[in-house]
Image (cartoon, rainbow, N blue to C red):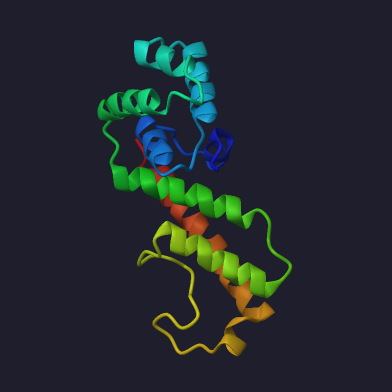
Length: 167
């Protein structure tokens, strides 16, 4: 699960659309959204929708979704851009703890990118997908270190792009 602190760590702007997209994909908890709404209230954003979010609990999913939808509708941000920010957060969270076992690490990295939709810009290579890499060649420490570092470089470039282009 994504935490608000994970988003802040990358210095990405948090938007209501981002939170709406995250909760739709079950990537963030209602508790995180409630805490973020309370933080916004403390900063002076006293819109009724923010007050309602701040008073929500884990059983209020439909209400939270409706409120987030209303708030997101007021923003200029686009779904695909907010999805890219969420993807960057998930990759960052994954890269925080490098697996010491290359087989487990490569399998988990592959699972992550399959969950994220294995887009054209993915830094990851899946063994046997559009390549002739054998399992013996693929599941090595050298390949795992290479792909791990490639993901780190991709993340750095992606976060830089997102920060430059966020509103």
